[in-house]
Amino acid sequence: MKRLFFFVMAVVITFTTQAAEPYRLPFVEIQDGTTKIPFIEQEWVLGTERADWLLYLEKGMFKDQKQPMYEFHGATVYKKPYYSDSIKTEISKIYTYGVLNCNEANLYILVEWYVDVNENIVFKSTHEFGGYVVEMLTPSSARNDVYNQICKETI
Image (cartoon, rainbow, N blue to C red; front, side, top):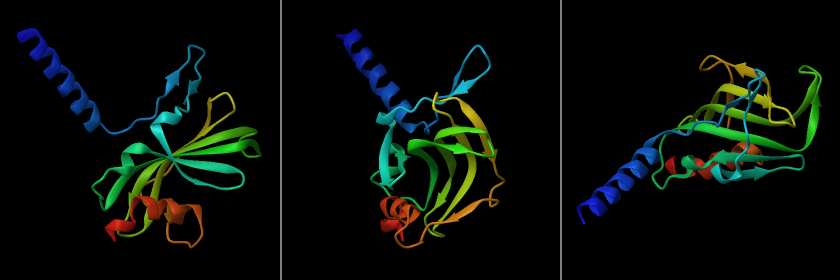
């Protein structure tokens, strides 16, 4: 009975510890030096869809308790990869990390990872806080859809 109690306590502690940890992208480093970001759909919620792409949001942003700011993780998945002239390859996904400020209705993008059709990171774009700001209240836009889903009740 004592062993069962300790096993149950260990499981409960493990789950509560894992639930409190922030989301991290599942980077996979390959021996040849490339780094991949596999898209694990179960970790994401479909935020919005447009003709050429789907925007997924990390599930943790949809907690019951609304907050004024969120650590933002987004994944733009292109229905058909597009060729980027600047990167000189086809892009299938763009992962975005930043801070979503619901009170200001701004998304402060800090890092974007561009991924090819084989899930290899082909380009990483980093920005200082405030260097790349996306205004979220443009009517009928994907960003407004995201803002409404995550922030609407906090304002």
